[in-house]
Image (cartoon, helix red, strand yellow):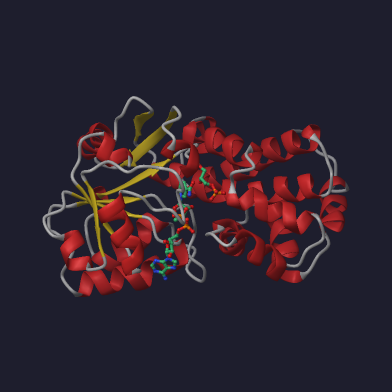
Length: 316
Ligand SMILES: NC(=O)c1ccc[n+]([C@@H]2O[C@H](COP(=O)([O-])OP(=O)(O)OC[C@H]3O[C@@H](n4cnc5c(N)ncnc54)[C@H](O)[C@@H]3O)[C@@H](O)[C@H]2O)c1
Ligand SMILES: O=P(O)(O)OC[C@H](O)CO
């Protein structure tokens, strides 16, 4: 919708024919964006070759843990153009490898890293689809390419800024989902705004700690891809990650929370990958550690809160 509103000709690849048909014929995707009318210049197909043909930009938004498999198929079918800019909207870290999505794209397609851009920030899809104003960052090693993507997605309600710290921007987007799970748990337990604010602030501290160790610019975490997305996600009932956390905080199991949420909740898998990445680099990420224990090892959220609150006191 953003690309179409910004004037681009768009072709969506969908797996289900009924989804592609509804987008093509009714300009709607009722299951995901009820009541939203898509621009006429947005088409859809179930045929990846048709969707990819002649594209200047390929914009990837599949669940992070499925990117490698999908991309391998598209790359081996020769669908990735030689000049195309590859854009990731995904906010996850790959399980098993600890790779960011841009790294998976480079590894699978073999393109030069400067052909890959990331669009991220406080971008809850339902609000954007209603045309409510927000901002984002377009991060890319190639400044000109970042500027080209920026102008391609610039609309009166969607304001993109360029950024040259792809690593920091991508990491901010992935870790905020884990912190949003923690905030949701606090909400589900009936805890209030002080608790959420403390989680957001200390969550940002551990995100920046990991980012700096990996080579990111610390200032990135004060920007849209860091604090901006973290606050937006942790505070919004529209966030799937926060909502999932609310269910866990109420004492529901992982399976019950999954049934209640349905859509992609990146933090649940990424918390494992981020925890491993942090441990591998000797970085302390106590909130991420506790979220992983609650999600995957059956720890009660109240025990996780106690564990965080009784850590050794230290300077901020
Ligand atoms: N929704 C948002 O507000 C938002 C905003 C910014 C970034 N993102 C990121 O976008 C990415 C995708 O999330 P989403 O919100 O579109 O999730 P979603 O759950 O709304 O949609 C995911 C889509 O992927 C499809 N899918 C599921 N498994 C697949 C597979 N194996 N191969 C191909 N397609 C598959 C589903 O059918 C569905 O159409 C995530 O990394 C998320 O963090 C989402
Ligand atoms: O619904 P969530 O939790 O996946 O968050 C969506 C976006 O990433 C918010 O910027």
